[in-house]
Structures are given as C-alpha cells and as structure tokens.
Amino acid sequence: MLIISKKYDLVLKWKHLLLGALFIFIDLMIYIFIGLILMNYEDFYDESEGEYWTWASMTSLEKAAYLGLHIWYLINLVVIGYLIYQLIKRIKKHTGQQ
Image (tube, rainbow, N blue to C red; front, top):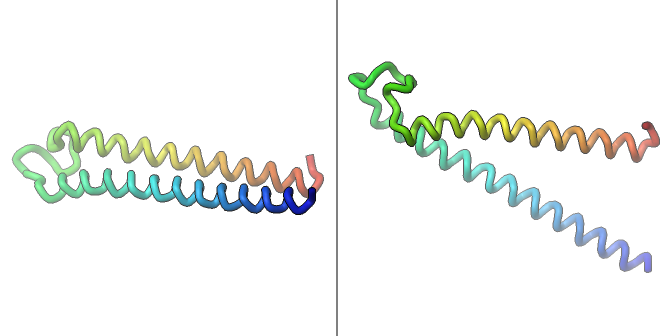
C-alpha cells in the first residue's frame, strides 16, 4: 500500500510540474503575441496621427493590445501573489505554526 501511495505522489508531482510548465508557456505566448502587435505600432508609427504612444496615434487593435498588456500584468501579479500565499500557508502547515 505504501508503494502505491509513493507512485501516486510521484505521478501527481510530474503532473503538477507539467501543468506549471504549460501555464508558463501559454503566459509567454500571450506576451509574445501582444508584443508583436505593439511592435507593429512602433514600426508603422506616423507622426501626423499624434504623439508617440497616445491613443490618437493607435488603431483599435493596438489600443486593445496596450490595455491587454496592462491587464495581463495585473493577472500575473495576482497569480504570483496567490502562489506565494499558498506556499507560505503550506510551509506554516508543515512546520506546525498556525
């Protein structure tokens, strides 16, 4: 019974590692996608449309990418904060502090 439990724990650890790697990969792909849209803005910026990085000089896609980037920053900060909270909670549980 103990051997099965250890194998199950090992499978769960690999599963968690693979899920974590997948989430990091997806996160990076979203940053790359948003970055490519914003690079398009930089490459085709026209001074006659307004000052650099103002709403007037951006298309609707570039505005959405700009807002999406800041929203994605916020989502990442919340997730990192949650992971740190869970880690501290787990450490306190294992050290016997409440």
